[in-house]
Length: 261
Image (tube, rainbow, N blue to C red):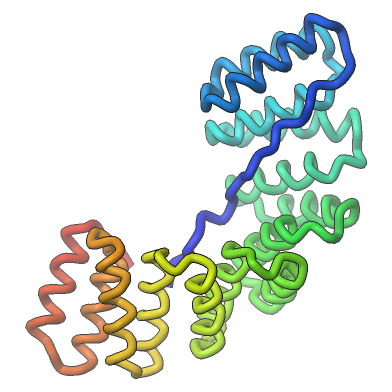
């Protein structure tokens, strides 16, 4: 079963301009406007102008870092957030974004160090706990990952990201029934999310509940007929029922859509 969500999803709230030199503030506001339009490259240029005039402005560094993350320029983003941390080491968001960038680079040990700093400063932020859980998941530390995700869910019980991660962890632990319970929470929150239905279908066929599995997979395909995982899982459920010809059709469609195990 593949992760339902990308592991590092940024929901960026651009901070308000700080009181600094007037021209620097104007560049910062210009950068924020460009950022909101999705023009990250020009936004970065504007933030650089603000920083040229006011190099100790943590807001400009932070907003530059978030723009760099949106361009997947993670090494540069880390450098920007290191500047924020140098100026204001008590800013939890800087530590969490740094942790997220490290996560995307596969530097999970360093990511966890940064995220623990963020949690120490802002322990009631469920998103940070989710990101830590994800880093632990990728290290194969499933028990610790589950502990972190349970805390994320306690803090944000309607977080689809946290429930999705919980399902993936439980899947890796072989606890398919509890994983279904977690996936059902994702479906409750996002009933038209095809990947969740596909994952539900896979879990059900692993529990040999083939008819229920096919119902879930048919729903996934109804929502997204190009979802390769759903077609592959449908093939597995059909094959388990001895419906080999139908299974071959599903496998072929999955392959056409680029399925890879």
